[in-house]
Length: 414
Image (tube, rainbow, N blue to C red; front, side, top):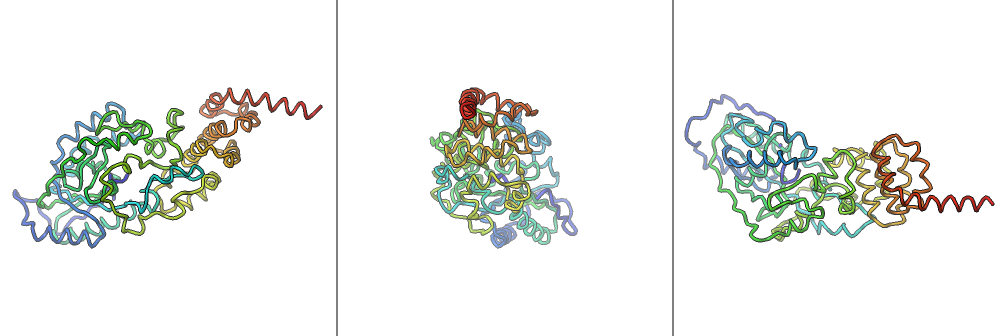
């Protein structure tokens, strides 16, 4: 994810490399070359830290996992020991090069919340997939660095057990705010992260200090109260988790709060006062596509699998697949209060996906109970437990309006 962004362990061996001897490399000219090259590759910020710079991270991660705050993200438990200790992931690492790419929006990221006929996609997912964009840069920089130093290295961008945010803070890219995301004095909340683990020792930079003070804007902005305390996140309540990582039905407890957010959520990021220093992304591929700034819910609801894949071919949204995406769209439709979206919800009552059918029942019950009642025959043929549960939850409105519909039909036959 953004500000938490690892090319899966690509390794560059380095010609004639031998294990580092005690003491730091004569780094000043070399580090200058690294900074200049990183800028030329398109990185907006680069800092250096050491593999032992986050000693408190393992305990924090363990507490997070023990409380179950990771939800269904079982991959976080896998190789958890390596996440908190970079040298466990790769024993040869001597320095960690942390790099950031700005993906700042060119306008108010919250403006779309008022457009209930449109869907709101998180800023980071309105352009091309950042994995693809940054991975090429990391590999190019890593290849050059291996040639210059003659030492092996590994590059990571969100696909390996690397705790990028604590490492970025230790390197001085920013600090972890009360929303647990990285905050930069220069770029606000909007940085993608990548890292290079190098067997070359490089002079480390000074960690950034926490500059949140008494501010709690990010905590108060969360629609679902996903922060049990400052600096602590319960992912199970986070809209980004619910709309992206969660594979099944979204609990009714959170649906209204989701509003028209159909992929991710930027509320806590956008609320940060440090965004007054943020600038729009300079990389064209990370800038918002016009068709993804406020896509029409009615059009999205008509997507089948091929058209979904075409629309999101180079975009992060493709990772969740058509069914989970339409689930999110239907929640937004149910929250819209727009009678013009009734047909879109009704048409999906017979979708092949049980996940979609379940949310179609909920959405139609919100927009037009009488239209749902007219479709109540579907309930008798439904075999999926989750869909049947949605029909049950909508039961009172279906029964009430079902009786009205039946009486009207009987009257018309007289």
